[in-house]
Image (cartoon, rainbow, N blue to C red; front, side):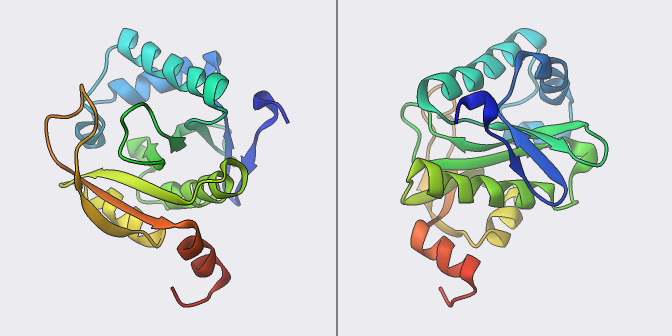
Length: 185
């Protein structure tokens, strides 16, 4: 399977590696001015948004994984990005999420992250997954809890994002699989 062939499908979403033609939606998301951006490093102009998209595309090329572009199946619209992510110096193998503000609260982050975690454990062989969450980001803490993750520790991201403590939430592959199978964790 080559990178362009990778697609994950959920009942309401299609996830695939980002492409250059996702840039307009990606840039609008990163410039959006919504409250969610304070947890993602703040709004970005087009130039840094382009660099962030290229970083994710490069991660797919070099590492075989990265954030997926997320599409709502019913409309075909790009609604965010989520998936496996572990840049140099990151506090662990992460599955993170960012959904456009107008689509928040509909369960898309949980639905997409569930598919991405399944994929990371099955195809990347990860033994754990984390979520690095700003201490004030109650929405992401709620998503992490719905995924079965627990608060693990305080930490910091690598520079240039190392200006404050973050919460690390997560779980092991065994905990994830037991929860998905309905067994007690």
